Amino acid sequence: AQKITQTQPGMFVQEKEAVTLDCTYDTSDQSYGLFWYKQPSSGEMIFLIYQGSYDEQNATEGRYSLNFQKARKSANLVISASQLGDSAMYFCAMREVPAGGTSYGKLTFGQGTILTVHP
Amino acid sequence: KAGVTQTPRYLIKTRGQQVTLSCSPISGHRSVSWYQQTPGQGLQFLFEYFSETQRNKGNFPGRFSGRQFSNSRSEMNVSTLELGDSALYLCASSLGTRETQYFGPGTRLLVL
Image (cartoon, rainbow over all chains, first blue to last red; front, side):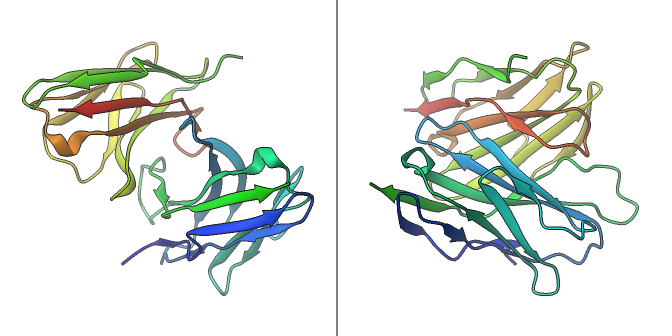
């Protein structure tokens, strides 16, 4: 079963507008972390934002915010005031912490959403 | 502070050869993870190292191996290369296994 689902293969947004990239996840663990990364055409994965499963407030980092709805198992990324440099592939990822587990480093990624910002 | 560095950045090999990729983590980071990215399979976890010990391994054949040195630098090795091993190999480092992972620029491997 797919653990991270990004249903939007591609998204288009006008410069200076806001855009929401969808992410739903599936886990039976109580403790987990959700991440968003940006991958420009150069290939490097750039960390954007993190949300812990026990965090009550939605995470924000500058123009990025994470709309975390735990009951719906969704962790959507909101980019405000889009810029041309935001054009890239965006990945949602999850780190699970199984009960009694000792390893926390493995990230499971979604298939990504290609965002194109038009001038 | 310097980011994660990976060498080489690009590599062309032929089937049956072996390859070693190197990753230097951010200074002070002790955990290193490796991922393979292909158009068909997306991003897949290979392994995770912490304090020179492999803590977790993904679902890859034994041809894929790795190690971590006392200075936290890590190498991964792929023996008997197959065409399907062509991919972008990404290394990520973090302070510990519970911390945010920061990725390097990747090594693009092409197997002919």
